[in-house]
Length: 501
Image 1: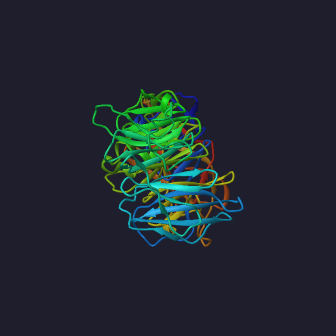
Image 2 (image 1 turned 180 degrees about the vertical axis):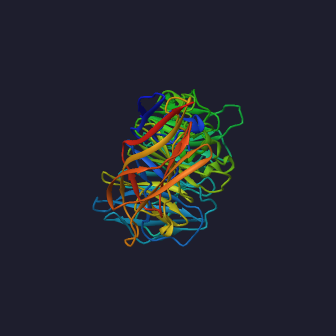
Image 3 (image 1 turned 45 degrees about the vertical axis):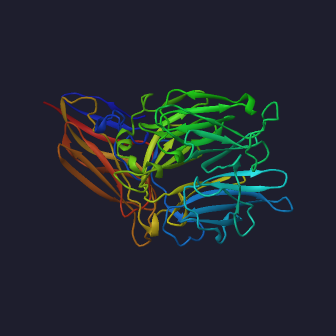
């Protein structure tokens, strides 16, 4: 929350206080009433009211020498001694690679299979008394599985009667596998027999029909199934224009209902679960599904990213992908006609705030889970990176961060103002030991700009500088210099003198 305090008279002074930084707010353009927000910030992140330069990235393991778009999955396995192991699977350019995780580090890549005709894979971890598999499907090739130790993947025949089932999305609930997004049956969801990933046939001899089966999710609006996930004891089925839930433990009691309040998802890889609700990208922004009802955040009054949502390239929206870590949703999207993801939207679920990071080429996310530790990774051009790690982007590229306030009137337009001293606390780090870090402060009013670049020492700095500009309304901009990391703490003060007409 931000506010201004002070007094006014024919010749008075106001003290504008920014109590906390609150992310991006485009709901009122450049005239937001929340002075702690910004209509056009980039590469600055707000956390608990503090403004800091976005974190960098660092390589995680060795690259696969391939510049095509990749997908990432984590497999969980047990060896013959019942010891737990985990591995990362990467798919790209018609190939499947695997790499063991040892002491939190990625090992060498092993080519597990090649010659596949689609790189748009989905995966699920399956475990029974004898098998620990990661099962992969892409809707074009036969499903594959890997036990975490073999040098190759193995085809998994999935058939129902005489029909080979090819679906690109797979999930698991109540010991059954569920598959969907089929080119031959775009409105159909399939399920396997319980405890048997290779048996998808209907069991007509069982009075409860406890076997495989399918259900058609017909909506007669031309839309197709785009994604399926298991969550909240249901199988959720996402179409272009609708959301459906299938619940029940046995085929004889399965119930299919449509969830009202949303038109469906634009991109299936944006569907994420934070343990309390499901979030996904729709035409006007994010939608939240609580388990019973779905509601668009925009329809509930959240218009803070209205300009960014309008910049998304709908023709390549399938590139968009998301993950959630520690109550932050990381959503990579293609903006401004791009054919690749160009930016990451960070949505703080608890605070309801947004930030924007310019980081092209996030092909897919993976939350690497080892014990209780979670590490956010992404793949780009065959290389896996840690997100929010270090101080630079690709190949040491500096992170140039800009935060611009909305226009500020100090409560009245009937007087001209002249800014005086600005007070703020900044923690700084220099990426070049031969240079001191700097911050650039700019004030703008009536087409004029006044800037001051302030040299800082490493560590905490208490700034008290005059940056003067005159006008009825003004706004200010904060920038780091040469990509040096800055943390701007709560409590900016700007002293303003008023002169009434």
